[in-house]
Image 1 (cartoon, rainbow, N blue to C red):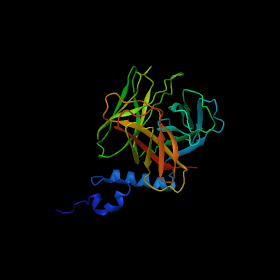
Image 2: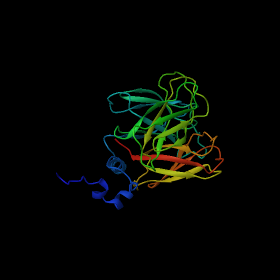
Image 3: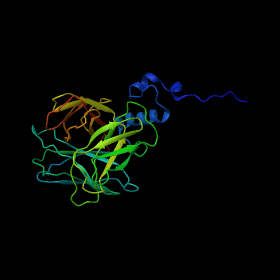
Image 4: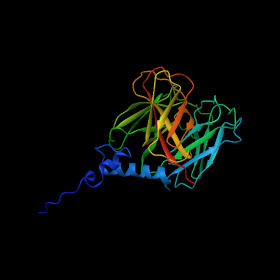
Length: 285
C-alpha cells in the first residue's frame, strides 16, 4: 500500500508572501487562490470583473443613472454601487440602490436630486468564483441573515447593500452589518421593508477595513496595494457588531490617494464600535 500523503497547500506556497495579501495561517487552498486573484485584479484588472467610475457631469437634479455593461449570462450577477464626491466640501449623503437589472445593464437610483455635477458613481460587479449572492429581506423586516454554504476563515470582510428591481417606488435605506461569524452575517436597516422585493446583495472579500472612532465623521482605509493612481473602483459597507441600536448613515467616498480611501458621513458616530469594510479593484475598460 502506498504511503503517499497529499501536501497541504501551506507546505508549497510561501507563507510570508501570502501574508502580504492578507492570508491568515489557517487558509485552505481555495481561500488562498481567491486572495491571489483579488491581489492580481487590483494590479491589472481582470476579465472577471466589471469595475467602473462614472462622473455624473450632468448629474445636477438627477435621481438615477443607467449603466451599460458587457453582456452577462443572466441577471444573477451581483453589483454594488456607491457615491464619490471629491470636490464639494458638503456633499449630499445618499444610498445608491440598484432598481433594475438586465443582462446588459442596470439602473442605480437615489432619493434626492443631486445638488451639483461633482458626483461619481463607483460600481463593481464581482466575479462568480467569489463567495457572493443575494438574500431576501422579506416584507416588514429590518434585517436579513445570510448563512454561508461553507464555513469561512476568521478575519474575512463582508460588503453588502440593498436592491429592489420590482417596486416602482422603493425605499432608500442605508444598510449596516450588525452580526458576523464564520458561518453567517446579518445586515440591518432602520425601517421595516415595505414589500417582499428587497434583496441584500453580499460579497465576502473586503480587502481593507477602516476603524471608525467615537464622534467621527470620517474614516480612512489603507489599501492592500499601491495602485499608482486614484483610478480604482471602491465599494464599502458600515459595520457595527456591538451596539444594540446602531446609527444608519449613508457613506460617501470623499478622498482618494494611491494607497488610501477616505469615507465620510453626515452625523458624528455615537460609539467607537463602527468599522467600514471596503473592497478596491483597478478599473476595467
